[in-house]
Length: 147
Image (cartoon, rainbow, N blue to C red; front, side, top):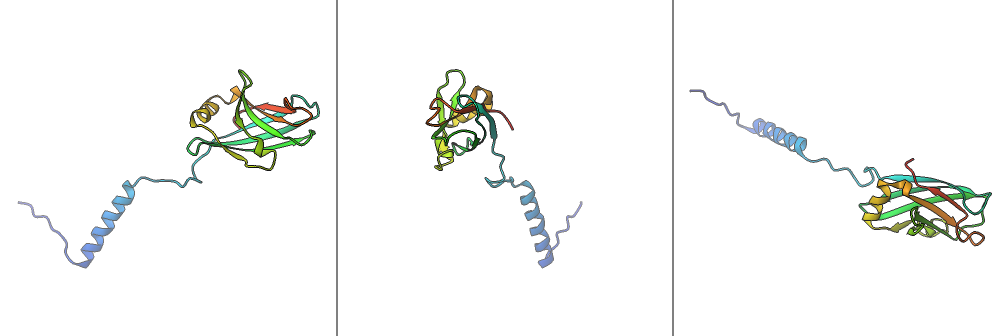
């Protein structure tokens, strides 16, 4: 018959705790902070759609988890914008209002998770359009794409 030796005393207790703790840490799930998680980015190179001298760039961050889209839009060669949107290419409908990103307002807007998923799955089906009083239908625009 085989006997199992079991250590006793304070040293045995410490050794047991180390083994139990290290095993728990090894099997514990790793959770990254929200800032460490990758957030999808899209961009659009903005070209003339109304204003022949205009150009610019749109950088978007889409967070399906938070249900929001954030945009930073820059422009050159056009009058000060008064509106910006993401449009669906198939019918030109406005799907996301980005006006705050060109008027010193909020750069982030709430957007439905289903729409965010659709934009991320098929970015080229959407475009950013920047409007101003001179070109109310759009001064510059660009199709969304992966950076």
